[in-house]
Length: 324
Image 1 (cartoon, rainbow, N blue to C red):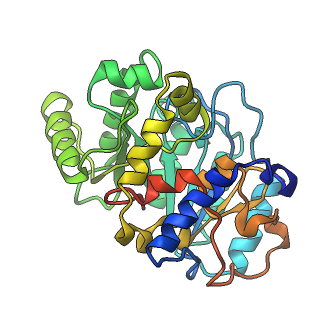
Image 2 (cartoon, rainbow, N blue to C red):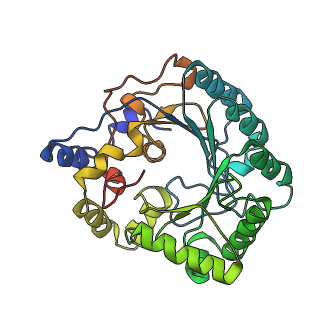
């Protein structure tokens, strides 16, 4: 985790470029009322996806403990939140995930669970899947491509087939059907140094192909560009694509997207309980308010008007239609 000392190692160009772009457009990026708490329960994952901004993978030991989970829950119980969003790594692999889902579901009207599908549908997850269904938890599933070769190249051999099986299982449980109230949303990411294509067109293509070939249905699809962080940033550097990719993002800066970026109304808490403006800042090591604040030290919500920490990866959320 980053601290104030490590923050000083960031270059001025990386930390100030995006803020200068905001200033040139007469914009500021500050907090509004916090509505969403995103809980990163660890970096342990059964995949090593090429686009992962957190470097999650099978060998990771950064996993939220039950003690930290209880500290998060205690804070959430003291404030009013609309949504709690559980993410990872693969959150399914946290040994206390069933306990966390039960606990957090009681603390906000809406609970989101982010899955890579292959971990959720692996052996022994039936109690978790049944719990998600019984509580009406919204599932947001990573499904980057309907092209098997592209998906496996990004996520690992055989992951596409496992993901299709996971979607079929969720459909059989009632997820993704319009009349069940069990919401299943997909997230698609480009497989190279490209920005995300038009979301409406991508959703239409995925919907038609998944239903025609596999009988799979879902509620919504979100098409997002990959943040130049973690494993994806290292690939951009090795392949000589970093500068060009950052230019694509910065050239696509859309001032109108700044109003709806997720960091305005979201707080991200890491596996060790420290707070960030978003999961990307968590990956970058830029803590909320530029100082390390533990969830156990929080009483109320962050004060509206507080500046949000930014760096060059913030262009990801403000290019084109944005990233919400």
